Image 1 (cartoon, rainbow, N blue to C red):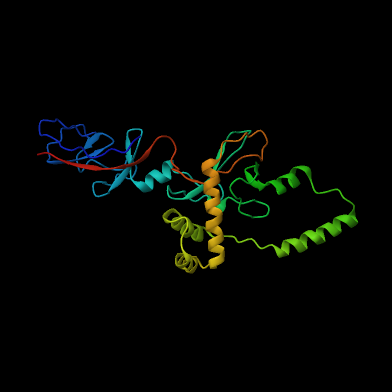
Image 2: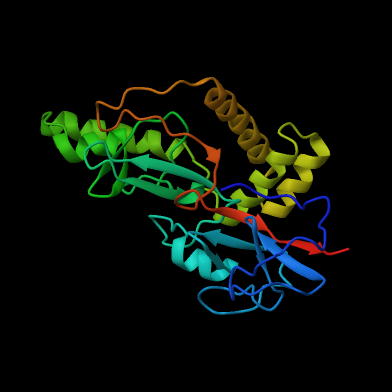
Length: 263
């Protein structure tokens, strides 16, 4: 569906019929949604029956009008990890199982390896195993099993790996921090030093971490814009696209209500 703009004029010779009560609209003012006209008192949510004439917008799907809350509850998309609603302004990740072709949608902060809890980056290989997201390393460990080296070499290797892990610190962002970072990134993808200090103060992060996040986001954005679709023959060889997208099923969209006046 498309967003309708307010017509430039209406004339009194037009016989407007209310889409709800099917009676002629004789009042001076009417409401129009998706090309259909309504009495001011007839435009109501199909579920809760709340009058929507004072609302600036509503949702229209399959001939029915919905308020925002009921539309989300009925047709909205939930994050596959935290099961909370995904808003149209949220940054999301999509993952499709190559066998069942079932697509899962995640909040950006929720898209992390189920084993190591590390957030996955754009372009990183991953797998969906029993609806669990796994990075390539933990997918291979799960499917192929641990290394079969000798006990001595295995112990030495574990010791080296544990020491190397302690030296590398990964920053994990909360959903609230990501929302602030993403909102500022949309306004300015390359802010100056003062803006970095302001953003760091709001998020509670260091200025250096904030700068690195913006640098990585610019790189992801550039890669996403230039990236072509890749083959998905192997379960963990899929490209993760970072994008702002509408989360509603079908072709429904947010519609602005229009108020028309008969001259």
